[in-house]
Amino acid sequence: MKPLKQFSIPFTGLKIGKHQFDFEIDNSFFDAFEYSLVKKGDLKASVELDKQETMLILQIHIEGTIILDCDKCLAEFAAPINIQERQIVKFAEDELESDDLEIIVLNKKESELDISEVLYEFITVSVPYIKICEQNGDGQKCDQEMIARLESLSVGTQNEEEEQQDDDPRWAALKKLK
Image (cartoon, rainbow, N blue to C red; front, side, top):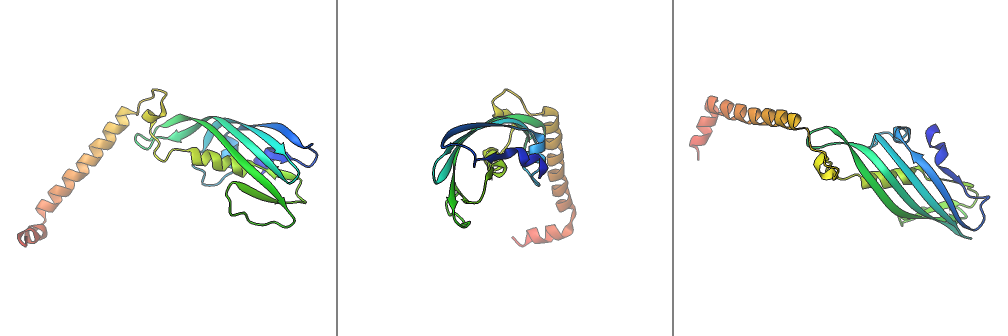
């Protein structure tokens, strides 16, 4: 994953205290993740790393727009994203799995923290379950031509099914059983 190398934070040389890191997230970031819900976007991630003796506390702020496909009219639209999250990183002698989703456990021998997956998860979780142009808030309307086309196709199939049922003598025999 070569494009994600820039999302590593080398924390071993840092003094105890707060440090600021900024990252640009573009289409190449999302291309690195197979089967990503988001394919395009232009985001800025600001990470404040608070280094302490036994852990790192990350305050993550992600802001920008991602391109989504409307579930209603299938058109692409830009959805604004504004995420504020916290991530805790603890150090351990041997790598242990943490039950808490907010805590990442690193081996004490590690010298870098790769936050690409953390950023990706925060962005993916912020994608709305139902993505519709009109609910975006920027005044964009759904493609009326596409909606009309979809409605004409769905109504036509319903009428055709009813006509086929009326033509089939087996259905008539079954209706008599009522």
